View 1: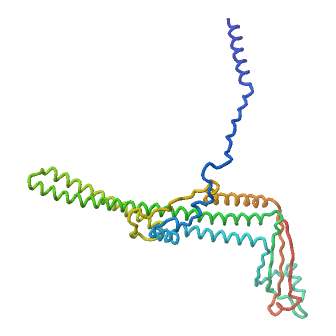
View 2: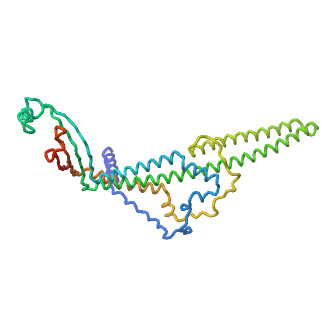
Length: 355
């Protein structure tokens, strides 16, 4: 009995091992969905992205607010400074490709120990006939120095390309901020127009209800209606006045939001009466490729990607040796009266290193 039980358990374990060691079944690749060869929508080269914002909106008050926002908004001003920073980085990266030249004037003084090899040599030598080396030896320098790094591996060129693409990215970033700002100003403006329209309706309703309340009071004095009817009309008037107060609060909050977008202190915002200032009759959207091309955020992402690619190449070039060439030319003497003596005071050097 035990022997049969052991054999059964062994068979189960063996079958489990065989199953677990079986080769995995290959996953069938799903068929790719075919891409349409033509665009199903209307094909028109014209699209709303090419329309200037000043011609898109027909409300003069709205266009004036947008113009103010573009001049004073803090986010827009920040992007302008970012563009200037990017320009400076381009100039810096471009300058690294050319030799650097500096001019300088220097003065120093040195005293060495008398009982040293240099001190003993100076004591026994004459700088000029009859003039020994002074104990406190001056060092006057006047000249130019130049240095240049040979861009063998393309490190500097790739750094310049990265800086240029970063600049283009900041330009597109400003366009993106400007687009969002114009849209937000327009949305806030039309929100204000709607709130003012609601307020006008509520105020007209309050005026009518107050007239009706006066009529009901006269009817109550004539015993036509009861006091309950008067209280009901009074409640309706108070409710409408409460709605009017809430709308005024909403208008103030929306005006504060608008003034923040405009970059100025809180003040009243003038809006047009109603929604009579309509948008253009027809808006040509264009084809999807045009929409992608005209979106600043997508263009900004592309430039950031290219800049990162050039930064990577420049970083990879850092692992290779760099060749630097340096030179100097100038005048050097221990006293000012000897500084401009030629050719005795002329000094120069030329060196290169690989690091």
